[in-house]
Length: 112
Image (cartoon, rainbow, N blue to C red; front, side, top):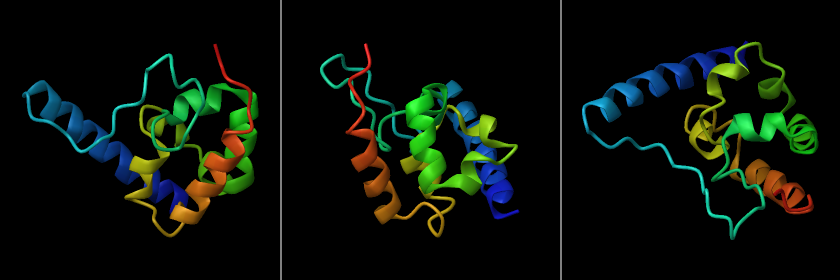
């Protein structure tokens, strides 16, 4: 139930941010790193959708934040990073969990 509420709050903020962007107002969302020099995934700069689309990365997320990943509403947060989602679910996505996720993600081979 908590994961559902988090996803709903994140989605509401995402739509509010989209309206602000359309008006030319910057939002607080972190843009993902699109540099070719950094092919490795991190919780701070990769969209959740990108991580979910990679079976190895998705397994890492399922290991550390299973309730959020299994939520029926996770698709609504695909265009956000875990660091952004943490604002709405600090009790489930702690700094320690983000560090553990990043540690596991760095073990994955670079993606081309």
